[in-house]
Image (cartoon, rainbow, N blue to C red; front, side):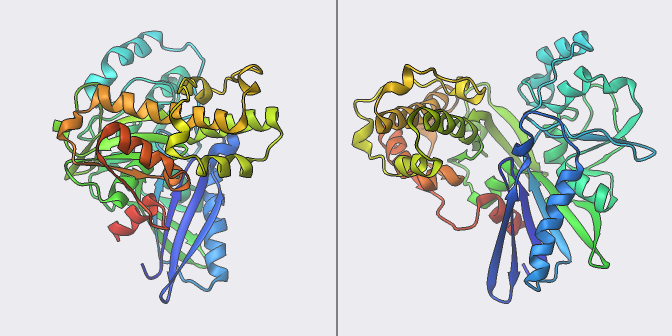
Length: 402
């Protein structure tokens, strides 16, 4: 890791690590969640990177390589004259009605052609609805590409994991509709994205993979295991197609590994919205809320209904005053039981539990709330492991690529 900066641009937090002698240094800044569902300038990612580089500069850590992972399904476009569009994250859902025939075609064919389920936030959908078809944008980019575009030179090459997540490309990196962009596609695990200029030298930027793919690498997922990543968003992932039943997305990691997933599961974003709601009604702090969740025991969930609508929470819809008249801890127990039951339902409907060896839990949430492991173990009858590394799995995944 010497002279390397490893950085993950998550939705909630931008996290990085670098090494000096035998010590690891960590740094965090706020992620793109500050923009909520709005489009914003892709310059944000470069500005965030500079904060991290300057932090490590003060620590007298020299950086000559940067490895990047990021939230998936975001994009911006660039033309031949280097004009660029705003950045559209996975939270952006265009309400424009442009190209209804193309949108209808995507509804019927996106999964069949790419392995991605049609849903709001997929870049190809926002691309048509925002009518970029009629504009002269020739290059596509995500977070890693934005960093190089604003900070130095963008190589116009996309990693297969990012390219596929946009919906423009199939699992082999080919356009399934027509050739929209001039980017080349790399199936290498360590794709060269470009470079930035910092402190009077050029620093090379690599990877540009999704945080989903990075977390898989960091969890050391085995062939008969299932990974449940519980972060701002959440995914259930396996490398083994034989563990899957139906309606499971297919996503490439690199040329040697394909992943089978259920994505866009309501998680940290929905829990945070619940936290805001209960704090408003009960006049308790966010710290008190998370501390209450951390102290919930398995027996506390026994006589509690798991009937909180997580999809409603994810969409930012309140549960009403009457709901919050109950005891504070009781409401928190209802939340956690509902949260975990959604995973049990997805596992039952989409995966073959009898063929699984174990479930690995990653992300910050299962580390903070021990009852998650206990409840899933009790209900699934599978071995449950929580990754307890102090380093986030996405950063561990990028570290494994070095």
